[in-house]
Image (cartoon, rainbow, N blue to C red; front, side, top):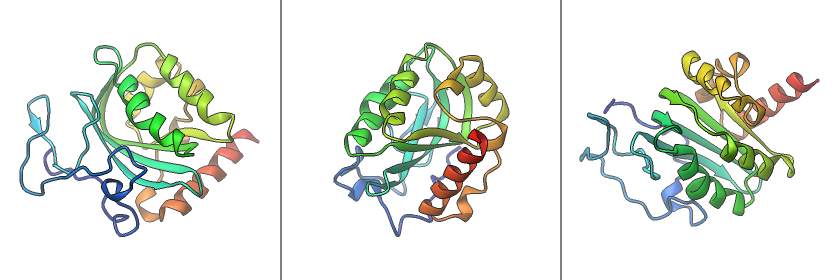
Length: 190
């Protein structure tokens, strides 16, 4: 796992650690010291900790004018034992919503497991953004992870599933990716 880096090709346009409005503003990362772990596995030092012992993330892009954020995750998303969604919602999402973000892209290719619990934080998150014309979309999550999320009825709050799991998101610039996802969503709704 130590060689899985967060996506870096947009760093010439956005760096969360340099964005004063980002919850990760001022963070420093080593390129050489591997100190963060998921269980017994070291992870690349560019991943950001946000309160979970098993789930890390990277805020890849935030566009406050267009009101969207793109986040990539790695690890085990565990709402059952460690309530990862609480940390994500309170410490990251609420800050971004306060800055006007209402569209959230969650990239889950490197999420190995998901353990469902209560869905109240997801419901709250959905309520926070849908009234403003926003949405939450989970893309490229592994099939077994998506199935576990669906078993917790998170699809009432997050757009997810097969239609959103084969998106070549790395081929797009952030604004084009969000436009593509908006179009996919409109086709699904009509």
